[in-house]
Length: 299
Length: 326
Image (cartoon, rainbow over all chains, first blue to last red; front, side, top):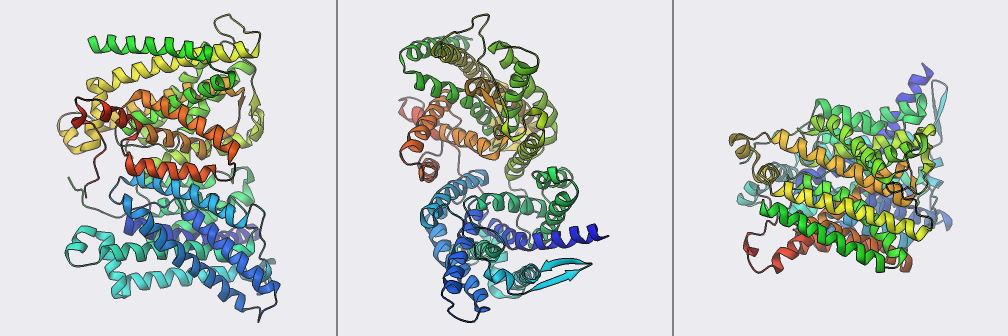
């Protein structure tokens, strides 16, 4: 019972940050048709930016401790506004309409560049930004003690998911984005500024990656190599959920979260590959993921 | 028939030239070239898949299988002959390929790429925890013999392995060229253009892709066995995604037009890597990224298309990948 509770709670906590990152990836894929390998680096840049900001803020004792959270949010936003338009306008737009697998390679190249760039800026030593992690105290469930911050993360993930869903389905801008996801050529013919939608959606995707990074930073030591773990995990989430599906990303993040937590508690040696096993199994039965998009076959 | 004879003649000339060049070249270059050819063989397999529009991000699976088959045969069965070990590597790739091909033949694009990636990561994860096979440390191998010849000096050993690798490489390249130009080998190009049309003409796209997959698996198995021999070491990193990514990189760099371009690209990449990791160790991956972007942007058909462009006749029909229609 206790074990089941532990797996359940650990799984949901794991799923929360994973969802934030993966939903950004799936959004970018939906709109731009790019499975962005560099998404993991953007997560890392977000984490580094937040860790630096938090270190500066608490190091100087500059104000009320709770403002640190706002600062982390600000760091993610700054990363998105700086890198989103730069990458989309500066690089990606030259590759649109190439084959989607070639586009993965283009973003793989970006990933390599960004990884080295982060090493140049932040060096190779670890950053710790643990102050915000302790601020919310501890919570206990079934005699298991958990850090309050982890539960706040679940709240953040739910809020991000809801806002995104409402934004896409209940606002005019969102509906335009959905139209572009459905068919960019027809949208363009109907007068939608597709270029702007691309830039907007990509920047939003970068923001979600950086947000995931910024709010994960207090839990981990920020160091080179975190980007790759994250991108492989969120790849799995997005593929399991069905490329381009927000609901799918949510369910798949829970799937992956539970699978990882179960592996860690029950079969530790399987932790390295359990995610891929789940992914292979899901794809064996649903070749395009759980929530596949139906698209007309164009000849 | 004349084309087949011509291909074999070219292959023979290429082998003689390589043998002479390897004899004159410094030892480090011989080592680099041996490893580059081994990896080039794996990339050649991806090129075979690429002709049908598929890119595998998990050739590490078969590369690793070939390496471990050769390594384990050497360590536990006492087989020390390079040719035998390479045959075993090829068989390992073949068996695994035949098992996996039917499972993957129905997938395309990103799903094919991610599933192959997932498979390789499962292999990586299992090998890392299989302590009887050395776990994450892997196993060391001793130098192989060649048809009864056991080189005494390490320089002779590396030259002998280079000769042997060159022979396998040239033979594989020639066979691939012949296959690519045959009717069966041209089907993937048609599938890449339009699968439905091909099905209506009576060919099975599943079979086309499946056979290409098995070819790629065998080539990767051979490449894995050769790499294991040239590195003298096997470990789970053979199946890690960065290894597979490198093969895809090579295949993109060379393009699917020319078979020779694959090995030119492999040597180029191996040289760039050894120089830049020596002179600017912190930024060479980024440099590689920039390089890859430029290739995709300005040379979408890869290095091979460059050769076609330089050729005076027939340049207009150069099979450079068409932009995707939507």
